[in-house]
Amino acid sequence: MGLQQKGMHGTWTSRWTFIMAATGSAVGLGNMWKFPYVAGSNGGGAFVLAYIACILLIGVPVMMAEVAIGRRGRQSPINSMRDIVAESDAHSAWRSIGWLGVVAGMLIISFYAVIAGWALDYIFAMASGELRGATGDLAAGVFGNLLADPTRLVFWQSLFLMLCVGVVVGGVKKGLGVAVEILMPLLFIMLLILLGFSFFRGNFQAGWDFLFTFDFAALTGRGVLEAMGQAFFTLSIGMGAIMAYGAYMPQNANIGKTILTVAFFDSMTAIISGLIIFSIVFATPGVEPSAGPGLMFISLPVAFGNMPGGLLIGSVFFVLVTIAAWSSAISLLEPAVAWLIEAKNMNRIQANSLIAGGTWVLGLGSVFSFNIWADSTVAGFTFFDFLDFLTSNVMLPLSGLLIALFVGYVMKDEFVDDEMQGTSPWVMQCWRAMLRYVAPVAIAAVFVMGIYDKFFA
Image 1 (cartoon, rainbow, N blue to C red):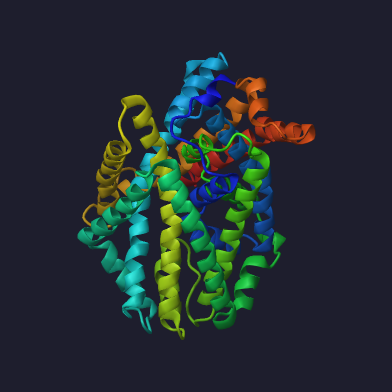
Image 2: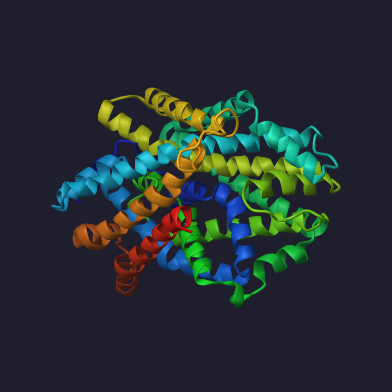
């Protein structure tokens, strides 16, 4: 029990604060456009079933393991792994899990802030009436003009990072805790308002059919692998964020029940977002449910711009997207900030300034990838594409795989049992089986698929 009293950052005020914080970390931009489109393209309801199965069999077990490490260590991911590796008499190479997560989180937030800046810009683009009656060409032109203007992108990137620093600098209780207790209820209220709008003003039946028609013939083996990847990445596993948040989790909170609750809220957010987006898109003739940025920043603005009350609701939608991005981004700053406080004796203002400043400079590479460096590629990668590929396809799967193997095989059972107190023996057996045998194979398959698709497909 020696490590459990070392925490210097405080704890969440309650189990529900942790649930909101972890849900905020998990709910992000991927929930808003990637999940809906991937589901609709892979058998709709069949994919949703596969996704939920993967959440339960892969995502939840690994997330539980990451939280267990964090709560055991009660420090930043780097120092938690250092101490738990030592007390487990394990090889020092396992410490790399902490470093890998923290570095991945910093790389992700560097380009995540740029994308979140697009959403900030679109709040005002919708509210100003610029997209009223928009055609596909007009919406594409508005988005293209945004990407072509580095000064504008840097402004929004900087503003978004300042919003994140404003939260993280307040610490666990006064900053992160207060923020998630406000942001997450607000997010869910806005989500329900948008769902109501899509039901009454959108083509709700078409959106429902797109997501929930059970076409098992369309769900290929690759679709199942995509479901695995989506389940894994949507829970923010391997980024250091969940481990850091686990360090602040009350000792009496049941990890299994808590993580199942987080997974439920995260999955429901993705599904409801899909219903909202496609009900609105299908209500406008000629608008295609395209993938990636084209769905959120071209197709949806056309739909909003041609619906009664659509501009107001469109502004609300992009506020929702910004909140989702904000709640995720603060969780990515916290691990590195916590480590600087512990290792370098910095205060929160100093640590936040250093980390946010570094990610801001790195983020300039992503900003320029869309304009002045757009033609500069290495092995087919722009700077933005390289960071996205490195983190999503290499660092996060590797981090998740190592977490599963460490807790499943290396961390002493007595320490794992300390953190999993209150869990029934049969649940523990199932969890260990998933962690040791199912999750590593599934994560490795997703890892190989990502590499193959990029370089060999």
